[in-house]
Image: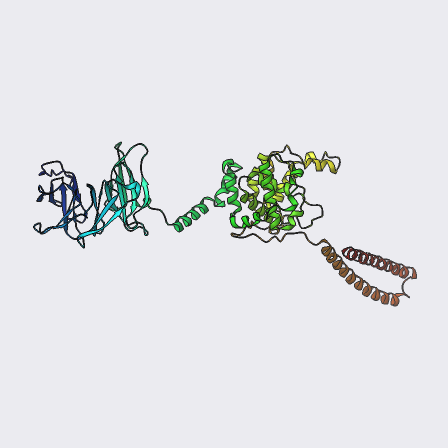
Length: 560
């Protein structure tokens, strides 16, 4: 055996047969070595033999040790009995007999970390707890069904707040079970599919468990890894880890360098960039409302051959309409939402939340003048190019979208200049174009970075506003009331005309007085010509005023 201080090897002689085990502790001044017939005491650190306990008249020894907390020596026997001595007086001994009726051989004993109990077991599903304080058998407990036939048992240190007394029990089949000693329930099982476990041991500091297998390999496990984690801590850590992994600031440098996100992880990155809350309960409530009547005939309109995709699209559109009824009147909504549904079709919740986030952030100005001519839903890019473009749109503020649309038009200028009429232009914007998506993106960034605030009022588009957690955003981007807007414009123009008319009359009155004073000094022709000019200007303004009044009256009549 090696000394702890200098690492030298000391020969411990005296046993008449091979030693079965050695017990020593960091706080114990004694080392015990034992076999089935004898127990030897050695002083530490000199490792000199100080005493011998000959037990020829008793049954075989299974375990022996020094309980330093009580300064006692304990010897455990195969029949379940215990023999105790004060370490300073070996002539005094006490015995704890096993419970009557137990008919099995004990093969393993272990001492609790506080020195209060010893637990023993053997070829049975029962374990006996001995109280060293009361010097008696405390209880007999039954192990879980998979933990019978104990080969080795070890008390693990209390590293978990929920489990203060934990046993590591190795059974004869080579399987290690971690047991809550208080409730006798199994916490964890450690096993190998190919090799049995031969033995286990705990490090001196109690932080690691060494497990030796039949193939001569020893694996070391952190003791705290053997326990279930607190659900609250797991959830908080998972949230923190998810937030770190899905931080949108970490994705953008990848996009800048590689011009697109990895195809394999694109859906996850989009979810991260849009900060989708995944409100399952809210989405379930909308789903429970069923199919919206506006989209019942969608199959005949879109002619989709994929029934699953059609069902997902109908469900997404119905949820959107239940959330914002106005959207059911947008004729091009299915075509607008379809690419996102196709991309996320395996997850209906993400289909819905991506659509809501897209509408609330990138479509705020699209519906304001409905039902006047609205945005044409375009299919000018292939599916591969479409997702790459949206990598950049989702990674930038909403004001980047009109820059991308302008970039496409600028890159198409040579083709557009050859169009002979409006129908040719419309045809061009409704079919897949030949322009490289890379060129479109590069031009979009150039426009976005070099356009003045007056030309591109970024504050009008705002920054990304993610969906609230546990709820839905308020849909407040419906169409303006065209008649109210027109009436307001007419009233503003009438007020301006009235002010101009009053100013003109005042000016005319003053001019007439001046003309009267100068009439004798100026020629009559000049005076008449000036009055005619002013009269014509007044008649023109009055005519415009009357025209506006008739326009307003017509608008009010239509409203009624």
